[in-house]
Length: 446
Ligand code: GLN
Image (cartoon, rainbow, N blue to C red; front, side):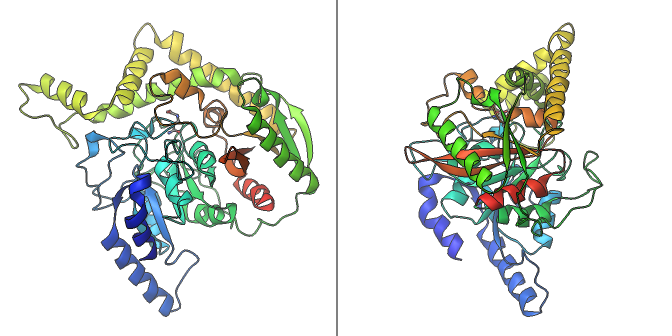
């Protein structure tokens, strides 16, 4: 009730929720009380949580912040939602996001942008901006997010919270509305690494409903949070500290790295030579996959349907034309072009080759260091409207986050100071399935 009241009284300023599920929350809370009274409570029993509106929630609108799904009541729960429900979590509602998770500022949402609680004239980041704003404004102690190219880490950085993008395949994608399937991964967003460790323990694990989910044991992430960092080898990629980086952010990141040295870590400069290619490669691959995934929204099966269609062609055209927003249309056009006969080799195949080079860069560096550190974003939270007229400017927001997704690696963003009263995020990148190590490193700093 306390969180529901806070949402009711304060969310007008942040617009972080699309749907508040008050009745369900209270009934789940009562069930949690009963479980506790019966001595059957687990670590998550009764904990409130907000879910990004990209996860299917049975009987609850699941909009993906699109007009296309404004009327869509999901008939089933995503695996991740079911896991939180089974663990006794209390769902407060569904959070705002960029339409179909395409964006870095939350401004492409059909429901209007979410706002950054540190300064409501500024964006909370995206696409999981509503989740980040809700946690930062203390409207929820924890929230789920998804990260295709930075959508957990970038809003976590801009809102001063902790977010973790797990290894590709660690968390089931079943029931998570697909953007770019080879890049999408769900993860926790909360105040601290400790809270993220608890959440990831609920979320992670094999799911036969997702053919890309990996059958590998899930450790208790809480057990290793306090491990010593003595001898930890940190690599700082020189490409992440180049001219694009705001000097105030560089300073905060370097200060954080010095703290790790005090905790016993050693630091060296490393190189990820193909970093500059990650934005162009991603913005071919992600739209290509999106154009294919979004073809299911045809006005026939479910979702938005235009009025008075003349014939089938008109039904498709107008349902999609009216149902999708501008950024989504831009991605569909770019993706369709890149996949079309004659252009496939020049764009899509080339981008996949670059993707392999980027993955090899990381493999070489991670053979030598335990974790890579750098900034999460090139600058702190920007003003609403500042980048909306220039998509490429918006895409550059992801320069430090995208490469991980192309390689399938895990990464975190944790708060590491402020610049002009706005939070700064430190990014920590590790090898495949090193989530326990990342959480340990983050926790020792916090
Ligand atoms: N900003 C990137 C994009 O628009 C990443 C979004 C995401 O991770 N979902 O594609």
